[in-house]
Length: 513
Image (cartoon, rainbow, N blue to C red; front, top):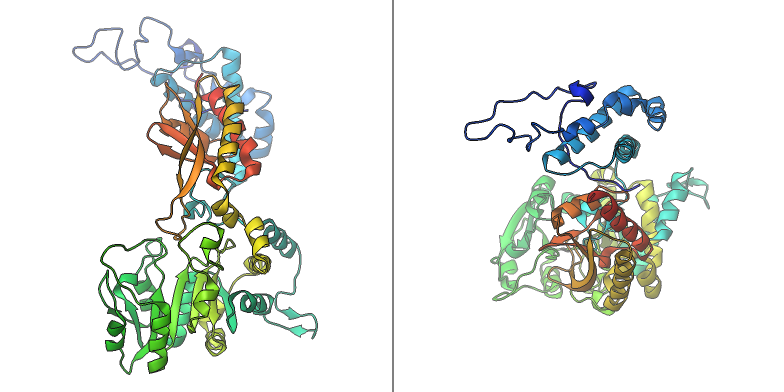
């Protein structure tokens, strides 16, 4: 059944009697200047009030299809859902909508009650179709996992595992043993560490090496990483003192050098992964900063943020240099996220020189921010894909979405639109070109050519169509542009195309009658 979005208003039951849980509708005197027979009820005085055609709460609760819901969830839960559904129908009448025939109306009301009650069994996150065109959508869970990682997580979650047990030696082991060799192989670094997110990685790093000391950073790299979390705040929490150098748009190597004191613990460079600076700008390269660090025996830390393992230009997307290139500069430590361009679970990675990684592992905070067994399972499966670049590009969804040929997207959009046009009555379905983006604080300013299925209606604005698509099963989250609701296939799995078609037809069949 379609998930109908219908609008209504409160009113009396058949014969003017109030039904269970409803307030009787009392007539109000007409305000000055308004003739009797018109007014707030849209001219119901003197003719049948369509609200009287709505089924009573008692009839709904007695319906055979509702009885299983009562048995499973209890009367109060089902009654609350029925009230909500009736309110939506009353609101529809208030806005001038018409009601279907009696049998159809009852059928739809009962189905909507069933859907509302069933939502109780879907507590927590549910899968949605991301049709926004934002590949790494922060609000929609960031990176979808590769199938290999999903299987590995399910395998570990369903029983016991050798999380911290050495099967060869028959004694306690380290959870880092499952990923450290992979990290060394992929990054070229001496050692690696994984914690529960990149902010935690930075907090652990700064707490280990800079508590009570100074960290020198360019003023133009004091970024906010989302959710109001800012690099200066993380530094303050770690006990490190921030030393800003340069200006917002221009920082030179001499600025860093002048800031060196006996208290200087680290030079820090932060990749501006969620915004760009252009125009009259200057910044210090990571390689030059490493050279300065070597001159003064000051470790250099690089927060690269997005976690691109190899240069994105290699699969047609400019803007991000790979992890190995950063490590090759001789930087002491590099941190990055797991659920952005890396394409895996939420995690924070630190790779670099072994002496620094070992010291971080021994810090008391390391246990507080350690990665859990399920994310660790997903990370290990994900990293194994990066051993072969071709495998990574074909199996990691984020990389597939970013590298998909626009012509392929156009063909998919045309196929969906053609099938929808054969059946829709109220919606206009077209195919349009547009631009998508990476999102998730990665590849700022990079626009990806894309193709969308566009929906519009003469009787409903695009915002209402967007709402109806969000409220269905499965929910589809797209974007509104001018008077169109766009379903951007850049971020939609090909196997979801049939569900997109299904939801378009449901929207057309239920929402406009």
